[in-house]
Length: 213
Image (cartoon, rainbow, N blue to C red; front, side):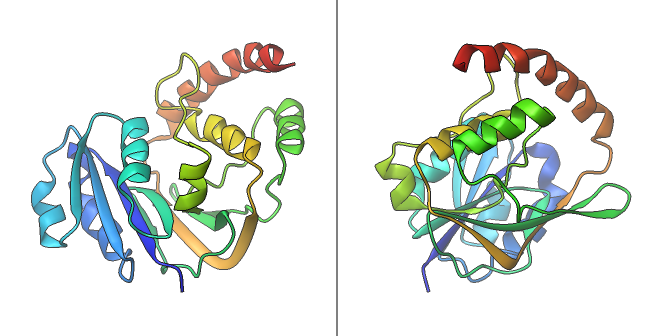
């Protein structure tokens, strides 16, 4: 079974969630805690996790790619957790995301577009894109293709999953949907903030699409 690194991006306010995220990585070869300006080194030490000081979500994802020792890398945020470490295959494998925002909802990624052309057509038509970035990425594939984590132009902390998804599809990955492979997330209290960010992102989407036509 391929080995797995789980990298968890966190902030100071995430301490109440971090234990749960780390415990869900039981069975991983390596756990990395990417501390974005927080003071969570003590929690990382309790679990013998590698502790990295980073300054943003983008930087933490990039650092995880650099320091991962497993065959595969799974990125989590502190309010995520896994049901188990999956048996990874391909270059990019994923299951569904179970999201709690007052009630549980399943984000089904089984129909995720498997090519960049299909993904861009989906984005143009629906002005959204299902992006299964709570996934396992083959580390050698990431490094061979010099892949990183990519911000959406002009917007902080929104759209980076979409941009990274587009960049990764450029590298022609072997994509596998694994059932069951669940990641769970708590999103309580984030709705209005996310709505504002999404409105900002939609304003920039047309310009982005025009720039690549």
